[in-house]
Image 1 (tube, rainbow, N blue to C red):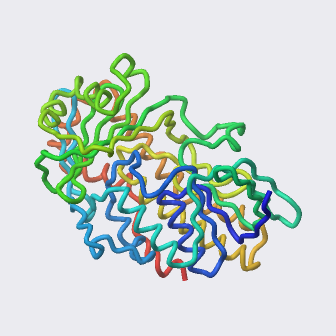
Image 2: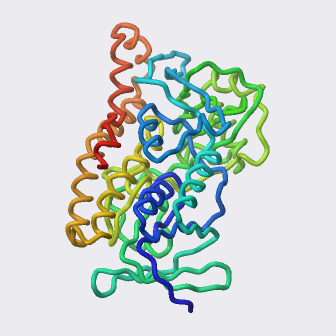
Length: 387
């Protein structure tokens, strides 16, 4: 086995992991970014970037609009109930629609430019705390096994725990098991809006991305799709059976080959989980109901909180115990109430009285806007807070 040194190892190369690597490599730390799959690749995601993400991406020097990608823009949300009623609400600012394939590519290019070492098709086989607060991380890439001695490890491996962490007690996630699916389509006319169709067992989101394409993503209970086939197309058509407007919306859609992906099991968070033996960021910390459309924002915000404190730890300004306590406290303060509001709104959305909501929205025009804002992270001046 080959032995190597690193300052920090980030496990998971999605938005949370890549943005963490960008920040720590930018501070001069020897940063290793690992993932068990190749990048860039299509991922199960709504590909809706809420207005709150813009400032954070600018802080990371990520400018999609300047990279000839031309993301779509949205300024409102439209919710379509199974019975046909609709609710429309303005977004608190301009949102973007951009493929995760392109966004992850931009983040990886930025990380590489700052000196990050990116290893894909790599499996972490074990992580062990050793003397002086350091970690011993064993990985395997093909037939090569490497053992890293590193001062910090950060988990950005998403909602599904890898094998080396799968034996830990999972008290932070809901018992309901979902499947997430996504596909790009052409042939759909769109407005500057995100469409959210409620259906049996979950919901399906539709929003424009780039190059005239539309992203269609759904989160559905495993129970609700039993007997409808296993392909992404089969699952999306199963969802449309309980919402006629969704079925009509998809009837002329042409799937873009190679963009169909799924993930299961998915379990939503009851509480944030900022730390196990090391800090968690993104979906590894908290899986918010996707109907809130703020998953990317949470990935970026959590990576910024974690990176700032990890930098202090790596530079010996704080101890390992302080690193743990400060990140745990700050993450809980930042995300616990947001998650509670999101879970409350999800429960309301699927209550038996949901067919009355469009009428309530007409009678109380500010209600829909309030609910949209209730599930948003506020813009906080990230650049100044990181200084």
